[in-house]
Length: 174
Image (tube, rainbow, N blue to C red):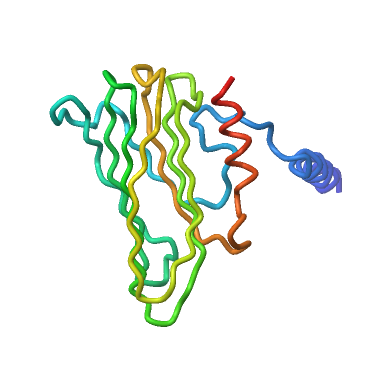
């Protein structure tokens, strides 16, 4: 009985804490504000010199684990120009499924502070392919240590995670 009460009390405390949500930016790897993503971690040291920039390993991940639907991202860092170039491609090989797809890329320093954040919520139809390139200014790019890229099916539609993205961008601006 005592063990059951302790477990119940701990569960109640944990549930209360979780109901308030985790503090923003509380995770050391930059992913703490984003939920439900399939993340891949790339160390900046794994990026290879390509002229004046660094080409990072490609991200290749399904956004829906049970379907033939893919997110591919090529990422290049140019520390001298303090810019990040990102090319994102969605491939929906499912002939009967339309989705909203969230794709997020975060570049963080050794302390876990977000230096660059990329977020797109795409509406992609069945059998479609979408590709777009983006460029971001990154004044502190030389301090970048880790890149986190994640994707998920955005079941809440076009605005899914827009508020999180705005919060993260506001944190970078300060």
